[in-house]
Image 1 (cartoon, rainbow, N blue to C red):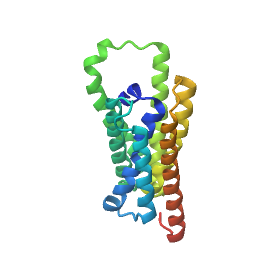
Image 2: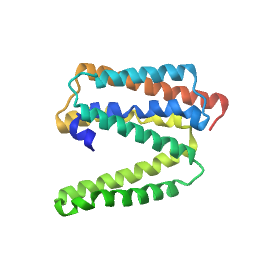
Image 3: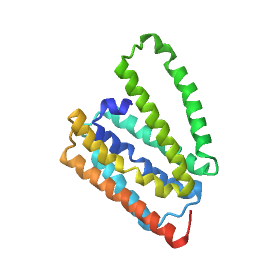
Image 4: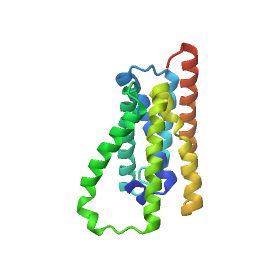
Length: 207
């Protein structure tokens, strides 16, 4: 949330999409999943794309970049842990994610409850966010039961396309040409990793 407040939507999403690259790096040592040389090359390419978007020393808010990068690290842990617990049912995973999240955020928000007075539209928007979040966590759980983490994570790169469109259509933020170039590099890398993983799965019959 802090990252999206400080950065344009497309740029924030591009930095957060370090996540699939981090997942790919740790898929072998933590999950025993094989990563080919091409996979490493695409990972490096994607990381270079993120650097182009971040542009160290550029005009992006530094704290926004930090928050987006921390989000990527946390999301990577979620992806890897979900794959590690692939034998658990999606409902079980969703239950514990929701349970822990509820207790954590109640404690985090308690000191500020008296200051919060959301309007009806705000309540509707927050309810929609909650429903979409629960649905996405459930579907992620199902996906990780069927395929390796190194294949599933890059599929989420389609978010980047939506982020560019929504950022422009709703918030009037359109990425610079340099940011678009970096986003294109990230997309190519992510799609390449996904295709490579799919071909490897078909060749060796891995799940």
